[in-house]
Image (cartoon, rainbow over all chains, first blue to last red):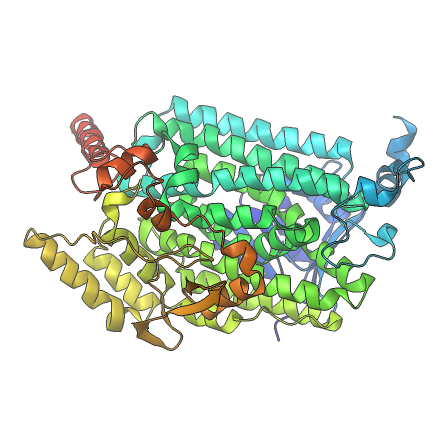
Length: 90
Length: 505
């Protein structure tokens, strides 16, 4: 049974540091590129770390800024000040 | 920096929700929330509701304003620079017409539905989330109208989208879906739209189709699409939270929720047949087939979701296997219906080109060459002989999904599927077991369906002739309807392309 969690982000300048942070911090993540968007899949869970995005941006980044780039997602969400995580419980 | 900003996200969200609610003192709760109990849903503790996005109102306004600024900058630029001339092909615009007439008014219906639910759900967490979603849906309706109004300056078929939504035969499919949801109780509405539509199915509408808009040069539509879709991620989260919350609150909720999941999955699947056709037949440059999109967004993503929800005893929707098998046939059967009834549609139709048929053969190796290519080739031959096929009989409609009875039996694509039920001495017809089950569950509701063909026969749609009915739709014959070839849209487009070639030398 599939346990794939997934996040789809716009393929824009704002989203690229987030995409980079995800692929760097989540080993085994698969990146699919479609026109205008990037879909990242991973088994079980996937986390966006605030610190990792900030390093790439060179400025403060609030995980809620992800709202400006997010297209879709699959998985149960857990969001706090320092991370944005998708996971399946099973 | 004020004190509130120093609180953590979870604390700020707790203050917004639980901190804002109060116990009524001079009215019973049942009088304030009169629709909260009749559906049989049992809630022990509303404070257990957690919105994982924990979006507070100040953040909500901040991010929504930023999204709007970005979107309107693109729309302005698209209009200023005549972006419509950069589309892949004039045919593409018909997908935008179907979107504006079929989907945009449904966004407005979703706005009204969530405003109602936001008032009538007793828990403060979901009330706030429903309010935000209500505002989001209004934003989607407005931004889509603004975006597509640019095309209305040049192309036919956009001018009466709202009027048409309420009257035109195929638009009763999405309209009746939302009418059905909005006339249900607040919990069923939440499952219908928040879970079945937003979480399980909206990806199929917005993600591959909007990516297709990007691929076909429609900068404006892709931008409103992804701007809306960023809200949808929040809506999907709300949809999954409402399911988990109801199932955690009381075991008696499970059979009620399961029935709604089964019902709304099937209703949604039927509405999305329009999107299947948009992806496989209406996008000149194609991204992925409906079959591929279904595999990614339903079989894979839905499979993981329902495996996760199995811990509550919830099973995947009934007839999910039938829907998956239908993915081989859906778009071809739907496009065939519109081709036959092009005279009564507010967008243009065409037969797939030989190159497109090869693409369809490749994407549908189990069905296209055997069942659909011969039909399209025969129709192409009839066109060449000057005998373009029009179906002039009004079709029988399914009482539940309101789609013409053109779908085939599961496992037998050569036999039309007919089902029926008796209710109070009358016979009602359905396209599938899924639609029949829905009717049998609530015959009082569905026996009142406003079915476009029945209404025409009863004399409620402007008259008995095609011309009178089209006038009642406010459809301009010869401009809005019929084939793309020979349409004023195509003539204008050809003129634009000739001017471009002349300038380019």
